[in-house]
Amino acid sequence: MAAARPEALPGQLRRGTLEYCVLALLRPGERYALDLVRELGAVDGMVTSEGTIYPLLSRLRRDGLVETAWHESPSGPPRRYYQLTATGRDRLDQFVGEWIRFRDAVDLLVIPKEIP
Amino acid sequence: MAAARPEALPGQLRRGTLEYCVLALLRPGERYALDLVRELGAVDGMVTSEGTIYPLLSRLRRDGLVETAWHESPSGPPRRYYQLTATGRDRLDQFVGEWIRFRDAVDLLVIPKEIP
DNA sequence: CCCTGATCCTTGCAAAGCAAGGTACCCTGT
DNA sequence: ACAGGGTACCTTGCTTTGCAAGGATCAGGG
View (cartoon, rainbow over the protein chains, first blue to last red):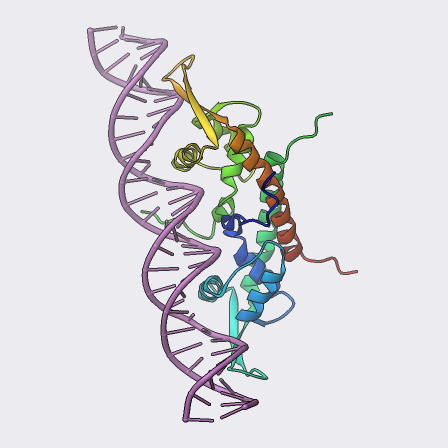
């Protein structure tokens, strides 16, 4: 009962999912890194940080799932904007299927059955 | 050797979840390790192996979430049976809430919106 | 000309899944 | 009696990835 705290959520949950959440955020259009951090921070339970996002974006770029372009900022140094590639879009679509399968499996296992 | 192809596996998805799937499998009653591996293997997308389950169970035991007892097997060497502790049960219940929150967040992010 | 803030990035660590390898026990067939 | 196979236990080493901490660079205001 003492547990009503907001509480340190299991960070490991985000493993393997964060990557695709980032790709999904890029679906509507290009974004830069700090913008993504803020957007993810605003989603319940999706907190992340720069130390996570930059290596992540580097991997996505290395694997050809995103492309980047520099644009000037209205105030501050230039920003590197990330954009989905066709490959990235495909991979994301494919992930959605895997995610749903996985999600349903976990639901089935961990959510207690109703006792009729 | 033979480094795992990152392409083929949604393996990282299981991170941080498998632990609780195991706890959930112990809810109805005690189980032994290989039995858990088979049970998880039968669930869609939840494949795992001995090299995963034994360290995992050791951690659970170390953290007081499960207790163990040896029982003889009808045929073969004795088995170590794992059973939920009160702490384990609490932790599992707590996880269910976190899981639902996280699951909904990912759903919201990655599943494309209907275009009305 | 420095200070603050925005933006980029890297380094080093820890957690956890997995393949592969190793040991021990018990039953059955010869 | 003992060899072989199936069951069960566990460990080692590798890899991936989230994160904290640290650092570099640029623009504008006092």
